[in-house]
Length: 317
Length: 224
Image (tube, rainbow over the protein chains, first blue to last red):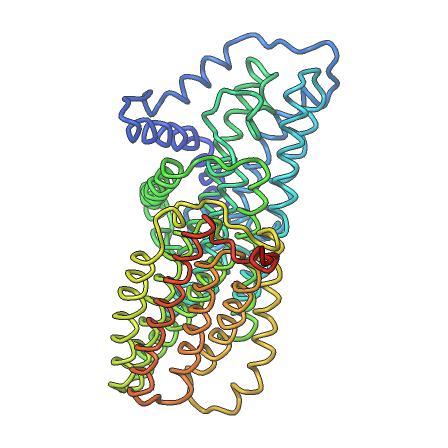
């Protein structure tokens, strides 16, 4: 009982602690592919440290929403981490507080508040980026719903801990068409939801073309640090959900074990994330950013893939 | 064959079928001529993979022959013929003219897949073979999507690829229902490349005369 709660908190610590590292590794790998050296993989930690020690400047015209938004954005991935399997194959203390839809809603709450905060300022780029994010969000929503519906239909549950074991018992389940198609659709969703290349360029500095990043432009000091950290954590949490729930639960602490196994699961999960970052970096380096109105087609394709997964599942293939 | 291996082959065939359907969607949806040709090659590869899987599971050398013929004609001969006959400019086209825009045509295609499943479900019960449950509805869906490609595209080469996708769909459904005699498959293997050659040559001359292959516009031509 107590141990399970402790492991649950350990999961949160892992996500908070290693999320900036994942971001640093991604940046470094991308720079290496472009034949540059790139910043150290620990640069995000230094940035956070620097920002946390700076003064914060807030516009006089802002309301409380602008001040609250970074805290909400920071808290939501932490709450989601309580619900999802990060290190263990068996459910932990808070696993049954909410299911995958609940986790989706909590993540959406953070996005909602950052959008409101972007509209709250007088900066013209904020509302522009916010409305674009909403557009991408509206298009991604049906895909999310179909993907989660199909996943829970296949596994007979919406609790991520129960879903993950379905894919490997027996192993032939892994090759089910619905499973493979769901993996593809979910990967496309992560690219769209996290504002990565074909949908948005995360390293772009040109405000007019920004989608996701322009929402945080007005923040400085502590607020900027929290927003940045929250973005890294959201990416980390989405990758964890993708790897541990949607793809395969290998490398996690097996049922009935604790202590050392849970600690050993940390490097294994980090290795899994590193491998998937390699794939993401490959995707990002080989594609160009889509024009804004082509995003419809990208997410339309994801929707079609998810629907095909559902059809093949319902017709009992 | 023991049941565990059979279950794995069954799952792998289902996976091949799902990817086969995805490539059919790709042929409907892509904007580039070259990409739709590559998707067609991929689709033929998946058809051959399914034939090999069925050949192993049902212990049938016929199906392995079908796979070999498919590989030879559809992944090598037909793409080579199309590359030779139709000029490079056509393949450089990045924006294919189409009747409906991409999201709309993908949605229509999804509806067609549902229709294929509804139409196939009574037939699946009639055939006792286990793989019919996978191959028949998916093959039927590929037939519908290929026909839809012909309708929705206005360029000659993508339309031809739609026709060839229909052919792929027929075989994908066919290998699971009846054991085709190899002579039928051989006849198709000669027939289909000839069709591809004729259409390719026709496209070439249209392109030489008009400078475009947007055959959808040809309906408006008049005598001078």
